[in-house]
Amino acid sequence: MVSIIIASHGEFAKGIYQSGSMIFGEQENVQAVTLMPSEGPDDIKAKLEKAIASFDDQEQVLFLVDLWGGTPFNQVNGLFEAHKDKWAIVAGLNLPMLIEAYASRLSMDSAHEIATHIIETAKDGVKVRPEALAPKEEKAAAAATTNNNAGRPGKLEYGLARIDSRLLHGQVATAWSKTVNPTRIIVVSDSVAKDDLRSNMIKQAAPAGVHAHVIPIDQMIKIAKDDKHFGGQKALVLFETPQDALRAIEGGVPIKTLNIGSMAHSVGKVQPNKVLAFDQDDIDTYKKLEQDGVEFDVRKVPSDSKDNMDNILKKAQNMLNEQK
Image (tube, rainbow, N blue to C red; front, side, top):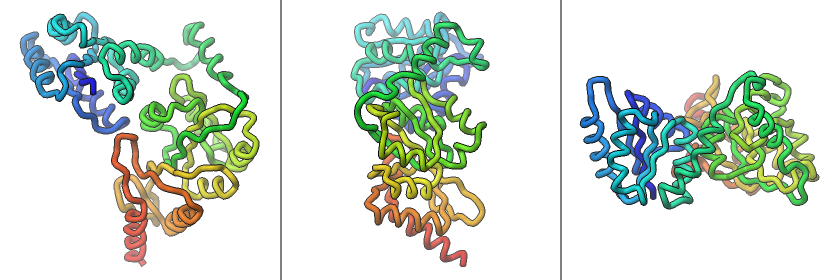
Protein backbone atom coordinates (compact mmCIF):
# COMPACT_ATOMS: atom_id res chain seq x y z
CA MET A 1 0.00 0.00 0.00
CA VAL A 2 1.25 3.49 -0.89
CA SER A 3 2.40 5.42 2.19
CA ILE A 4 1.27 9.02 2.67
CA ILE A 5 2.86 12.03 4.37
CA ILE A 6 0.76 15.14 4.98
CA ALA A 7 3.04 18.17 5.47
CA SER A 8 2.15 21.74 6.36
CA HIS A 9 2.99 25.01 8.04
CA GLY A 10 1.60 24.86 11.59
CA GLU A 11 -0.99 22.34 12.79
CA PHE A 12 -2.90 22.18 9.50
CA ALA A 13 -1.51 18.73 8.65
CA LYS A 14 -2.59 17.28 12.00
CA GLY A 15 -6.06 18.84 11.71
CA ILE A 16 -6.75 17.57 8.20
CA TYR A 17 -5.37 14.15 9.20
CA GLN A 18 -7.95 14.05 12.02
CA SER A 19 -10.72 15.16 9.65
CA GLY A 20 -9.77 12.46 7.16
CA SER A 21 -9.88 9.82 9.90
CA MET A 22 -13.35 10.97 10.99
CA ILE A 23 -14.68 10.63 7.46
CA PHE A 24 -12.78 7.65 6.00
CA GLY A 25 -11.69 5.81 9.15
CA GLU A 26 -8.27 5.32 10.71
CA GLN A 27 -5.50 4.77 8.16
CA GLU A 28 -2.26 2.83 8.33
CA ASN A 29 1.02 4.19 6.97
CA VAL A 30 -0.05 7.84 7.08
CA GLN A 31 1.91 10.51 8.97
CA ALA A 32 1.24 14.20 9.57
CA VAL A 33 4.38 16.37 9.64
CA THR A 34 4.25 19.99 10.82
CA LEU A 35 6.58 22.99 10.65
CA MET A 36 5.97 25.03 13.80
CA PRO A 37 6.80 28.76 14.21
CA SER A 38 9.86 28.05 16.36
CA GLU A 39 11.29 25.51 13.89
CA GLY A 40 13.40 25.74 10.74
CA PRO A 41 14.11 23.70 7.60
CA ASP A 42 16.38 21.19 9.38
CA ASP A 43 13.68 20.46 11.96
CA ILE A 44 11.00 19.55 9.44
CA LYS A 45 13.52 17.58 7.38
CA ALA A 46 14.29 15.45 10.45
CA LYS A 47 10.55 14.94 11.03
CA LEU A 48 10.04 13.89 7.42
CA GLU A 49 12.88 11.37 7.60
CA LYS A 50 11.49 9.92 10.83
CA ALA A 51 8.00 9.63 9.31
CA ILE A 52 9.32 7.85 6.21
CA ALA A 53 11.32 5.43 8.38
CA SER A 54 8.11 4.46 10.21
CA PHE A 55 6.37 3.16 7.07
CA ASP A 56 6.01 -0.52 6.24
CA ASP A 57 6.63 0.36 2.58
CA GLN A 58 9.12 3.15 1.91
CA GLU A 59 9.35 2.48 -1.80
CA GLN A 60 6.02 4.10 -2.72
CA VAL A 61 5.46 7.38 -0.84
CA LEU A 62 2.99 10.15 -1.67
CA PHE A 63 3.54 13.61 -0.15
CA LEU A 64 0.52 15.91 0.19
CA VAL A 65 1.83 19.39 0.95
CA ASP A 66 -0.01 22.60 1.78
CA LEU A 67 1.89 25.15 -0.33
CA TRP A 68 4.09 24.90 -3.41
CA GLY A 69 7.41 26.59 -2.75
CA GLY A 70 7.02 26.79 1.03
CA THR A 71 9.50 25.29 3.50
CA PRO A 72 7.63 21.96 3.91
CA PHE A 73 7.50 21.58 0.13
CA ASN A 74 11.15 22.51 -0.30
CA GLN A 75 12.30 19.95 2.27
CA VAL A 76 10.08 17.26 0.78
CA ASN A 77 11.42 18.15 -2.65
CA GLY A 78 15.00 17.72 -1.45
CA LEU A 79 14.26 14.18 -0.27
CA PHE A 80 12.18 13.46 -3.37
CA GLU A 81 15.01 13.93 -5.88
CA ALA A 82 16.62 10.59 -5.06
CA HIS A 83 13.30 8.72 -5.37
CA LYS A 84 11.37 10.56 -8.08
CA ASP A 85 10.89 7.38 -10.10
CA LYS A 86 8.59 6.08 -7.31
CA TRP A 87 7.64 8.97 -5.01
CA ALA A 88 5.26 11.84 -5.85
CA ILE A 89 4.42 15.27 -4.43
CA VAL A 90 1.08 17.08 -4.73
CA ALA A 91 0.76 20.62 -3.35
CA GLY A 92 -2.44 22.57 -2.60
CA LEU A 93 -3.70 20.08 -0.02
CA ASN A 94 -7.43 20.05 0.75
CA LEU A 95 -9.76 17.52 2.36
CA PRO A 96 -11.28 16.17 -0.90
CA MET A 97 -7.72 15.49 -2.11
CA LEU A 98 -6.85 13.57 1.06
CA ILE A 99 -10.03 11.48 1.01
CA GLU A 100 -9.49 10.64 -2.66
CA ALA A 101 -5.92 9.60 -1.88
CA TYR A 102 -7.16 7.26 0.86
CA ALA A 103 -9.75 5.75 -1.47
CA SER A 104 -7.26 5.42 -4.32
CA ARG A 105 -4.90 3.34 -2.18
CA LEU A 106 -7.52 0.57 -2.27
CA SER A 107 -7.06 0.06 -6.01
CA MET A 108 -3.84 1.84 -7.04
CA ASP A 109 -0.36 0.60 -6.21
CA SER A 110 1.86 3.53 -7.15
CA ALA A 111 2.29 7.05 -5.78
CA HIS A 112 2.53 8.41 -9.34
CA GLU A 113 -0.83 6.92 -10.30
CA ILE A 114 -2.56 8.26 -7.19
CA ALA A 115 -0.99 11.72 -7.61
CA THR A 116 -2.33 11.97 -11.15
CA HIS A 117 -5.75 10.75 -10.11
CA ILE A 118 -6.40 13.02 -7.11
CA ILE A 119 -5.73 16.39 -8.77
CA GLU A 120 -9.14 16.65 -10.46
CA THR A 121 -10.91 15.74 -7.22
CA ALA A 122 -9.00 18.45 -5.37
CA LYS A 123 -10.07 20.99 -7.99
CA ASP A 124 -13.69 19.79 -7.97
CA GLY A 125 -13.76 20.26 -4.19
CA VAL A 126 -13.56 24.03 -4.66
CA LYS A 127 -17.11 25.31 -5.13
CA VAL A 128 -18.92 28.60 -4.62
CA ARG A 129 -22.38 29.87 -3.73
CA PRO A 130 -24.26 31.66 -5.21
CA GLU A 131 -23.66 29.37 -8.17
CA ALA A 132 -23.70 32.41 -10.50
CA LEU A 133 -20.21 33.24 -9.20
CA ALA A 134 -18.79 29.98 -10.60
CA PRO A 135 -16.72 30.09 -13.81
CA LYS A 136 -18.77 29.47 -16.96
CA GLU A 137 -17.10 26.14 -17.71
CA GLU A 138 -17.92 24.87 -14.21
CA LYS A 139 -21.60 25.78 -14.59
CA ALA A 140 -21.73 24.00 -17.94
CA ALA A 141 -20.15 20.88 -16.43
CA ALA A 142 -22.69 20.92 -13.58
CA ALA A 143 -25.56 21.13 -16.06
CA ALA A 144 -24.15 18.20 -18.02
CA THR A 145 -23.83 16.13 -14.84
CA THR A 146 -27.48 16.77 -13.97
CA ASN A 147 -28.62 15.10 -17.17
CA ASN A 148 -25.87 12.47 -17.27
CA ASN A 149 -27.03 8.90 -17.88
CA ALA A 150 -30.72 9.61 -17.21
CA GLY A 151 -33.13 7.07 -18.63
CA ARG A 152 -30.59 4.64 -20.07
CA PRO A 153 -31.69 1.07 -20.78
CA GLY A 154 -31.25 -1.44 -17.99
CA LYS A 155 -32.29 -1.95 -14.38
CA LEU A 156 -31.46 0.26 -11.44
CA GLU A 157 -28.56 -1.27 -9.50
CA TYR A 158 -28.66 -0.92 -5.72
CA GLY A 159 -25.00 -0.42 -4.85
CA LEU A 160 -25.61 0.32 -1.17
CA ALA A 161 -28.65 0.89 1.04
CA ARG A 162 -27.91 2.62 4.35
CA ILE A 163 -29.83 3.69 7.45
CA ASP A 164 -28.34 6.93 8.75
CA SER A 165 -30.19 9.62 10.70
CA ARG A 166 -27.75 12.18 9.27
CA LEU A 167 -28.49 11.02 5.71
CA LEU A 168 -26.00 12.55 3.26
CA HIS A 169 -22.96 13.77 5.22
CA GLY A 170 -19.18 13.56 4.95
CA GLN A 171 -18.76 9.82 5.54
CA VAL A 172 -21.40 9.03 2.93
CA ALA A 173 -20.40 11.67 0.38
CA THR A 174 -16.76 10.60 0.48
CA ALA A 175 -15.91 7.22 2.00
CA TRP A 176 -19.00 5.29 0.92
CA SER A 177 -19.33 7.04 -2.43
CA LYS A 178 -15.73 6.20 -3.27
CA THR A 179 -16.35 2.56 -2.37
CA VAL A 180 -19.72 2.17 -4.12
CA ASN A 181 -19.12 4.56 -7.07
CA PRO A 182 -22.81 5.42 -7.53
CA THR A 183 -24.16 7.60 -10.31
CA ARG A 184 -27.13 8.57 -8.12
CA ILE A 185 -27.69 9.11 -4.41
CA ILE A 186 -31.36 8.65 -3.50
CA VAL A 187 -32.64 9.83 -0.12
CA VAL A 188 -35.92 8.05 0.59
CA SER A 189 -37.99 9.90 3.20
CA ASP A 190 -41.50 11.32 3.32
CA SER A 191 -40.54 13.94 5.90
CA VAL A 192 -37.40 15.15 4.11
CA ALA A 193 -39.18 15.24 0.74
CA LYS A 194 -41.63 17.76 2.27
CA ASP A 195 -38.82 19.89 3.70
CA ASP A 196 -37.47 22.15 0.95
CA LEU A 197 -34.53 23.38 3.05
CA ARG A 198 -33.27 19.89 3.94
CA SER A 199 -33.86 18.64 0.41
CA ASN A 200 -31.84 21.46 -1.12
CA MET A 201 -29.01 21.00 1.37
CA ILE A 202 -28.83 17.28 0.57
CA LYS A 203 -28.76 17.90 -3.17
CA GLN A 204 -25.95 20.43 -2.76
CA ALA A 205 -23.92 18.02 -0.61
CA ALA A 206 -23.64 15.39 -3.34
CA PRO A 207 -20.06 14.64 -4.43
CA ALA A 208 -18.85 15.82 -7.82
CA GLY A 209 -20.27 13.79 -10.68
CA VAL A 210 -23.10 12.27 -8.61
CA HIS A 211 -26.67 13.56 -8.73
CA ALA A 212 -28.72 13.46 -5.52
CA HIS A 213 -32.50 13.02 -5.28
CA VAL A 214 -34.93 13.26 -2.36
CA ILE A 215 -38.12 11.26 -2.90
CA PRO A 216 -41.05 9.93 -0.84
CA ILE A 217 -41.18 6.23 0.03
CA ASP A 218 -44.09 5.50 -2.32
CA GLN A 219 -42.12 7.02 -5.19
CA MET A 220 -39.17 4.72 -4.42
CA ILE A 221 -41.54 1.75 -4.51
CA LYS A 222 -42.82 2.87 -7.93
CA ILE A 223 -39.25 3.25 -9.21
CA ALA A 224 -38.44 -0.28 -8.02
CA LYS A 225 -41.33 -1.61 -10.09
CA ASP A 226 -40.67 0.57 -13.15
CA ASP A 227 -37.24 2.18 -13.04
CA LYS A 228 -37.30 3.80 -16.51
CA HIS A 229 -36.17 7.11 -15.00
CA PHE A 230 -33.08 5.53 -13.41
CA GLY A 231 -32.47 2.67 -15.82
CA GLY A 232 -28.83 1.68 -16.01
CA GLN A 233 -27.93 3.74 -12.94
CA LYS A 234 -26.13 2.62 -9.79
CA ALA A 235 -27.75 3.99 -6.63
CA LEU A 236 -26.66 4.65 -3.09
CA VAL A 237 -29.98 4.65 -1.21
CA LEU A 238 -30.29 6.42 2.14
CA PHE A 239 -33.02 5.94 4.75
CA GLU A 240 -33.39 8.11 7.84
CA THR A 241 -35.06 5.39 9.94
CA PRO A 242 -35.45 1.59 9.95
CA GLN A 243 -39.22 2.11 9.72
CA ASP A 244 -38.81 3.87 6.36
CA ALA A 245 -36.54 1.08 5.13
CA LEU A 246 -39.03 -1.61 6.20
CA ARG A 247 -41.90 0.12 4.44
CA ALA A 248 -39.87 0.45 1.23
CA ILE A 249 -38.62 -3.15 1.28
CA GLU A 250 -42.04 -4.60 2.03
CA GLY A 251 -43.41 -2.42 -0.77
CA GLY A 252 -41.13 -4.11 -3.26
CA VAL A 253 -37.78 -2.30 -3.20
CA PRO A 254 -35.29 -5.19 -3.75
CA ILE A 255 -32.81 -4.49 -0.96
CA LYS A 256 -31.20 -7.58 0.59
CA THR A 257 -28.58 -5.90 2.80
CA LEU A 258 -28.81 -2.74 4.90
CA ASN A 259 -25.73 -0.87 6.01
CA ILE A 260 -26.41 0.54 9.49
CA GLY A 261 -24.56 3.81 10.00
CA SER A 262 -26.06 5.96 12.74
CA MET A 263 -29.34 6.41 14.62
CA ALA A 264 -29.64 9.58 16.65
CA HIS A 265 -30.42 9.51 20.36
CA SER A 266 -33.68 11.09 21.57
CA VAL A 267 -35.95 10.93 24.60
CA GLY A 268 -37.01 7.36 25.37
CA LYS A 269 -34.19 5.72 23.43
CA VAL A 270 -31.26 3.72 24.78
CA GLN A 271 -27.78 3.79 23.30
CA PRO A 272 -25.91 0.46 23.38
CA ASN A 273 -22.95 1.93 21.47
CA LYS A 274 -21.64 5.34 20.41
CA VAL A 275 -23.65 5.75 17.20
CA LEU A 276 -26.85 3.71 17.49
CA ALA A 277 -29.88 4.49 19.67
CA PHE A 278 -33.09 2.44 19.87
CA ASP A 279 -36.59 2.47 21.28
CA GLN A 280 -38.85 -0.58 21.31
CA ASP A 281 -40.30 0.23 17.90
CA ASP A 282 -36.78 0.38 16.40
CA ILE A 283 -35.89 -3.03 17.86
CA ASP A 284 -39.14 -4.57 16.63
CA THR A 285 -38.58 -3.05 13.18
CA TYR A 286 -35.09 -4.53 12.86
CA LYS A 287 -36.41 -7.92 13.93
CA LYS A 288 -39.11 -7.68 11.24
CA LEU A 289 -36.49 -6.76 8.65
CA GLU A 290 -34.45 -9.78 9.72
CA GLN A 291 -37.53 -11.99 9.38
CA ASP A 292 -37.96 -10.64 5.85
CA GLY A 293 -34.47 -11.93 5.03
CA VAL A 294 -32.58 -8.63 5.20
CA GLU A 295 -28.95 -8.84 6.35
CA PHE A 296 -27.26 -6.09 8.36
CA ASP A 297 -23.85 -4.55 7.72
CA VAL A 298 -23.15 -2.47 10.84
CA ARG A 299 -20.29 -0.01 10.34
CA LYS A 300 -19.83 3.74 9.91
CA VAL A 301 -17.23 3.67 7.15
CA PRO A 302 -15.95 0.95 4.81
CA SER A 303 -12.69 0.49 6.73
CA ASP A 304 -14.47 -0.28 10.04
CA SER A 305 -14.92 -3.86 11.24
CA LYS A 306 -18.51 -5.08 11.07
CA ASP A 307 -20.45 -5.18 14.35
CA ASN A 308 -22.93 -7.93 15.23
CA MET A 309 -26.46 -6.53 14.98
CA ASP A 310 -28.04 -9.33 17.02
CA ASN A 311 -25.74 -8.56 19.95
CA ILE A 312 -26.47 -4.83 19.66
CA LEU A 313 -30.23 -5.44 19.62
CA LYS A 314 -30.02 -7.76 22.64
CA LYS A 315 -28.07 -5.15 24.59
CA ALA A 316 -30.58 -2.45 23.62
CA GLN A 317 -33.49 -4.67 24.67
CA ASN A 318 -31.90 -5.36 28.06
CA MET A 319 -31.33 -1.61 28.56
CA LEU A 320 -34.98 -0.88 27.73
CA ASN A 321 -36.17 -3.64 30.07
CA GLU A 322 -34.10 -2.16 32.90
CA GLN A 323 -35.84 1.19 32.40
CA LYS A 324 -39.27 -0.31 33.00
